[in-house]
Length: 67
Image (cartoon, rainbow, N blue to C red):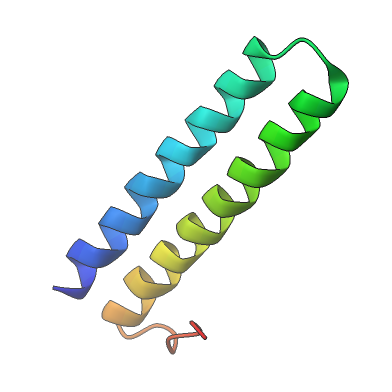
């Protein structure tokens, strides 16, 4: 069950990274590009790192570091 949740986090993080990349490509103004990259990119990083942490804790390598 824990691996399913971690895979879901990694998949959601990848989707948000794709959204950030599309925002960087699509927006014309600098501030809109910065906004798209920081909002979606930060959430993508957090989700992917949380998913990796859950995956490693499911295998007994690390402890769960989520707050």
